[in-house]
Length: 363
Image (tube, rainbow, N blue to C red):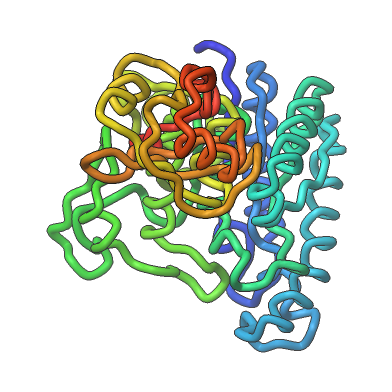
């Protein structure tokens, strides 16, 4: 087994008991499994839920709070309890860990996105294991990832992980709900996540968590499109992650025959950037950027829509609809002037360089 970069996602239900407390036995089981991965030489990042679930009882809530202020207060208290437990257990095993709290703006802002990549890369290079969670204390509902399943999918793409392991209380993906249908068939392996699978999947499976199989499938589809292999399933014991890596885990493996990793700048353009305008191009330019690996030139642009500046991201449209997104080198005002004045000297200049262009298929 080659050395890999692995993201492991652990949900609230896998860390806490029914009373909302951190279940130390569950936590230690995960820690031991993560330690064994590290001993095999793998780089490991942990995306861990559990902050809200660990904190709400301490605040006097009988169950997981439903108000934003209740969730944020529980997260503020629970995150410290969660990290305290992780630090104590990993320190006993001579492993240093670092807390990373992320929000949507950390992904939508290009500089912060690159900073997140640089920080995670440096921690891994120094032998420190990042423990990542959403910063629920400051996140608003409009700016949330939705759940840590999606966060794990995005992080796995950001760090160019080889594997994303999503541990849950269901042993894989089924064609219907195995809790209500005894004849449900399990998918042992998949090469794609289809929309009908997402539509038929359920929501949160426990009072402690926010996700469900639907959110895991959406996260898996995201990770798959970013070139990452995924496992979704249920395992216990200190060797569970090694079993999963060896291909005998109790769950569903998702991968394509040809996996393609994408640079972080293209990931940001495709999945996180704000769209500031649109460019409509001719058929020759469409063929050049889609099939010939070329940059978009002035000469291929037929219409400019919106107001944008150099460095902004725009959508590009051809005769059959949207082709993709790219980061422009020139403002909308300048492009409109070039088109209107038919400036010959500018016709061969690059408006979107191929390194800053992402075709729609990535999404």
